[in-house]
Length: 273
Image 1 (cartoon, helix red, strand yellow):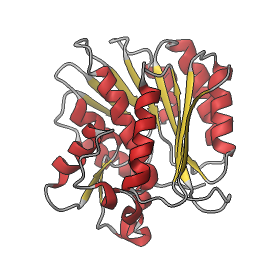
Image 2 (cartoon, one colour):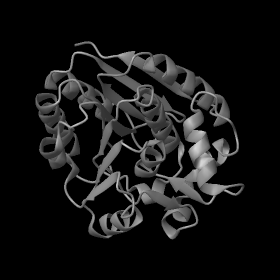
Image 3 (cartoon, one colour):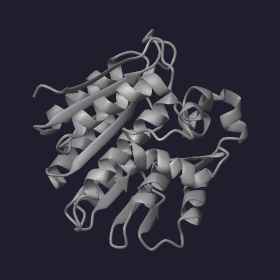
């Protein structure tokens, strides 16, 4: 599957993924001790919803268009950041680097990787004046082994590839094994698109195989899993924060209503080790 984020900015999978990301960030903000986030596939940071790529698919209409301007009680940070970025009229959609940036305090850090030359250069230019953010034009999978553990010893690794390569799941599995060896107590969140159950099953198995003893799998699908169209998306979270499962369930219940899903099915379960 090819999931280049510029074509899918603000769709239902992005809303679910990024709302969960803000829930993970909220947990890190509960303590005064600084944290670090490694974002392995940063993309552009912010997406113009009026761009040729976004307008070609117009997937925003089934995603952020239905959320914008609503309080979203289950993920208030996500709703606030989207609104702050836009004001009264929706034009821009925040990718993971921008959402993380908006959550950072003075001593927190973001390390974001982007291998695509043009996207990496734009990302570096966007955040060049923010000393809390380091942009690396490098392979995000390789960065897991090179940049962990963070000196803060608390934080998050967010793995969100475009799934352009046939071996992406194998590379994710290798990154999780490497990550566990380097930082066994860190929280790792891996996002994946859903057409059927294949990606989720393989990534969940990879997390357990890497050595993680506490693994959560969360999926939200507004459309049928027919193996052809994009049904929804999921996250496998290793070392999930306390009570995050409850918060994601609340999010799924609210999104089902806000997005106006007729078929919606969702699940939030611990993976058996």
